[in-house]
Image (cartoon, rainbow, N blue to C red):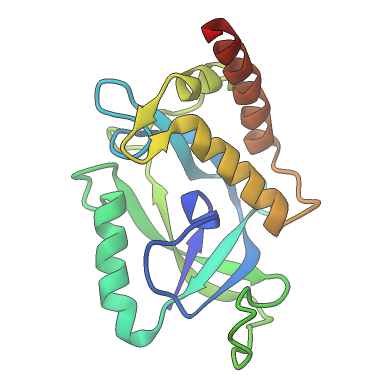
Length: 201
């Protein structure tokens, strides 16, 4: 079984996996349109994290990381991810969706030489926030998104850290790929973050 990561899973995975691959899915767009009330914000001051929304362009690409889960770990990992993202809507209202993943490059496991990475597109699972869940923030302009992020902190740390790590991770894993929304949010956040730090001096 494979799981696609496009947010925090780009730079970390808190579950066991056999291998991981860089690549993309089509027909979606990555957007900071989901409130976070238990990781990068709190109920009284939600942060913002990315989710996937359907794109008007069926060939639009979202790059990320696919994780291969060993058969003996599937039940544990799926239960863990279901709880983490609240697929039953008790928390943040994500749902599992099956999509086609297009792998690019070698498996990111230099210490596991026996792994043969798939080269053809294959089906995997992705978690995305449906628009009906209570934590779906919806569309907003970049400046408003950045303002929310700069002023939000949750149990997992500052919301700004999430943005910086995601943008850095994507540049590292998919150099040359331009994610306009992600990088525009990062630029706006850095500008506001710099001004906020200057005001504290």
